Structures are given as C-alpha cells and as structure tokens.
Amino acid sequence: MESHVALKKTWSGIKGKWVEPDVRDSVVDYVRYWSLRTGINSMVLVDLIGISRGKYYEWRKRYGKVNEHNSWVPRDFWLEAWEKEAIVEYCVNHPRNGYRRLTYMLMDADIVAASPSSAYRVLKDAELLSQWNRKPTRKGDGFIQPLKAHEHWHIDISYLNIRGTFYYLCSHLDGYSRYIVHWEIAMQGIHDRNRCRDHHPTGVSYFGLLRRIKSSVI
Image (tube, rainbow, N blue to C red; front, side, top):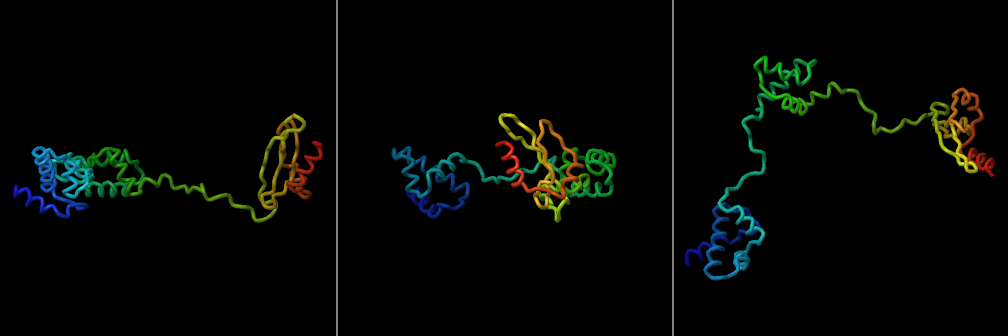
C-alpha cells in the first residue's frame, strides 16, 4: 500500500505534459489494480490522478508500446543523397534525353540503379523537367485593352426576338470606344469585314442601336 501511495506522489504534474512509456504504463497498472480490489470505477481513479479520461484510454491502448515518431520510416530501396545528386548531374550533362532514357543510361554506365518513376521525381524536385515546357502562358493576365479607336474590333453575335421570330444580331464593336462600327439583323449569320470598314467613320453607340431596334419592333 505504501509503495502505491509513494508511486502516486511521483505523478504530480503529468497533466498536459509528455511522459515516458514506463510512467504511462505504471498509471494504467495502478488504475487496474485498485479498481479490481476496491470496486471503484476506474474513471473515478483517473479523475483523482488528475489526467483526462481520453488520455487514459489512449495510454491503455498503447500499453507496453514505446513512443514512435509519425514520419516515414526509411526503407532500404530509398534513394540516398549521393544517388539523387548523381541523377541530377547526369541529367545536366545529357540535356537532350528524357527521364526514361536517362534512367537506363545511368544503369548502363553503372552510376545509379533506379526506376524511371524515381528518376522523374528527383528531376522534378530539381526543376529540370520544365525545360521542355518553357513557353510562357498568358493565362490569368487579362486582356490588353486597346489604346486608340479602331485598333481592335470585337465580334458579337446575339439573338433578337422580333414578334415571335428569332433573328441574328451581328455587330462589330470598337474595343476602345465601345461603339458599334457596323451591325446587321438577319435570319442567318452574315459577317463581312469590308462592310465594317465602309461604316466605321459613322459608327453608332450601343444605346443608339438599342433605340433603333426598339423603334423597329414597335
């Protein structure tokens, strides 16, 4: 009895702290021992010790096990640092070959024995696979607006319901002034750029076009 009391005194301050596996197992043994002999609920003893019930259940689940880290366990087939450096150096010296061909060239030269997927990951981490895709993309940069009139025209095709009949509204818009250079309403889509060149000196605004359409429908 005295040994259990002395043992319990050594557990002061274990709440919210990391404890060694031996201390963790001794707490589980203590709760089991006195719960069986006194008939007291184990949770009451856990509360008296001063730890949370969730922690006690976790300790009971890990009883007899040592603490292990959560990182990847090193494997024998993993590439070592010098092998990765050799793959990168060989790729720099042979830039015209793909990663699959480089993999077998490395094995033929008795430098590194690795799978093509491993070589691909090493070269990708070293950013050596982007040289085949160097063309820059303008995605997300937005449209470059024109700086003067008639520098850029936009084509717009929409539908008009005129007395129950659908027509095509084909129009050319100036990208700078947002004026309609030329427009036509037709049963079929008709677009002639020469007509726009003939009409652009007397282009009408968008609101003027709406008024013209509205008056023709009424």
